[in-house]
Image 1 (cartoon, rainbow, N blue to C red):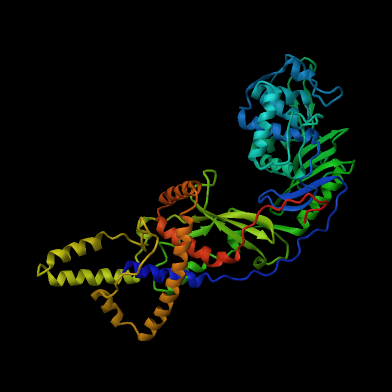
Image 2 (cartoon, helix red, strand yellow):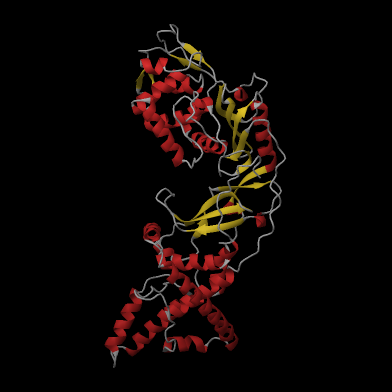
Length: 535
């Protein structure tokens, strides 16, 4: 009986998730150009590339390197730790390079050094912090490359913490956008980076201390380069790197990271053009407000006469956003679902849904299970009726012939779990069979149901059996995959146990989704383009 109900449930889910063809996506906006050799602007919330030029080409970064240096120091140090400036930290810099006047033997807090690093762009502060964290600047550079790789950087190699010229020290606009995105999400970094002035303590060369100011002109209201909404960033310049600039800005709920590499005194105008383009053409919205692929599940189960509570407690994480052009329609967006999660994904997430505009990744969200107490999980109506009739029959028959066996059956019914119970596959076979449904209880239920219903239900069952056969083949194929997939599945099962829903229930839901609406969602990969323009 339970397997019969499972088939009905599967058919209802399949019927409610028929693939919907996405409209052809309108052209992505591209009405911007910059003079610098490389540049990019991304949505900081989603990582979506709004526009880019030579985004994977390697350039010298100059002092925007210090964004990564500061991020690593903040992640590894207490701000009140004391830093002693060594001879190497002070004098192992290029003559005439930017300095805060700090000398060998000076002792400052990590906090002081970070302000000198980000606001004054002091190269001796970069060296001193690197030695404080890793012992040597060379060892710190190794940490920089590891951290950059963890952020998804693939075009970079860092050789020092300051950004001074070195043939083995380079990055790309895309990689710097990823580094900037991580820094923007660090509250301590942004508190320091957005400061308009800071007073350094008394040191050997600064007998009265030293007030320092940020070099980024777009955050200064008294400068002609000031940009409304600018939050911070970092400047850079060397003869080989040209002008480099990273800028963070926020307007109307949209937060952008703009990067300019190898500019030629146009870094501020290029950055302004990138930010204006982003704010003028794009929106950052919650996918949960528009994606209806999951909302039909509850209605479909209700129509089928089943309580939806056990499986409909699914929702898209409303805090996650995607980026779309203004005046766009959501039907132009496609998506791809996967439930292969890692330990780095947030607790409570069951699957990840990625969204695309043509081949362009525009963000993702998580499928999560709503919090439900055990008494909220209800039995399907048919199971409830069957349990009631069985209990009544047992009470009427009492201790008559066969009573002991009926008592056992009644006890088993009392111990049956609440909510829709999906069958577990046999250990040696994934093939599911529909049991004999000629029980007296089912006959009594069938007697009160019109023939038209059974005719329609029969069609649904046939359809469900065919669909289930396809699903079984897919399951069998997946079971032949490597050990890595099995390990990912085990992590997912652990998440399900914490969420209070059985793995069979969720696997049934996800498989129906993937064989239904998921067919229209193609897998996509990052679109890397090293040509002149990225569209």
